[in-house]
Image (cartoon, rainbow over all chains, first blue to last red; front, side, top):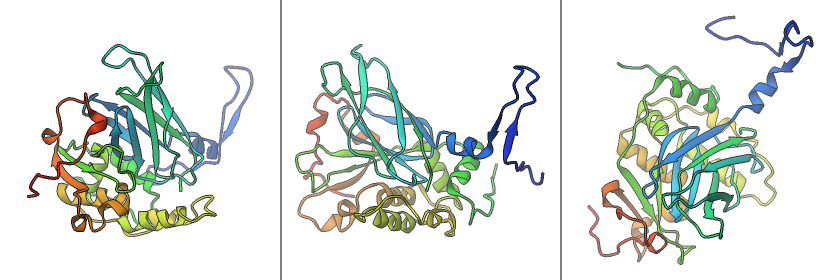
Length: 131
Length: 157
């Protein structure tokens, strides 16, 4: 250990609690953690309430937003999870991918159950490999 | 309190952002970038909103890579046989850019996050396609959001 850094390759438990010792490769911790996340607020004037590894959000029209990352992903096959709530009209809104991913962007569209675009706050989470 | 940025050249950009997330206060800006893509003439105007944590990094200095690093990665990604980035080191090993003013950060963000064909020679086109404005200059309601276009009559300061 030096300068506040702990270097290790495997994290193991003793098994005293569950009766079974388990271990995980440290690489899984690095590769498995979320690489970006964001929460928008202010329907009508979307802004990022808080985030990590996001440089900007682009309001592309009703319900459609592009999130742009600061650190690029390695490829376009990363995973995006997103949540929304009822919008200001009390309409249930679901989020669907819009444009294809690039290594620095994920574009999402929020629509009501009839498929009509609706503005809503969004929470997004990105998993995948970094460039 | 003044926070000194560590020497970050060679440190993975994502790790730098982790440092910044712990050390820097987010900065909410009133600036907005309104733009239209000439390749999508029927689409409404887009509005790019800077991220407060990103803006804090830009104004702190010593964290973000030169914008040219992003351009190089975009060139790689535009190749038809692109599978994955092999030059990510351009983000991590290039000397980070220094402290920016809020306005300089907005200009950097335009060149990073908005397509080049929108901002390059933006002032030479017949139609205005990029405007930096304040949040208060945007319409206050979104009833006709998908019809928003840049006002071609407004004077640019």
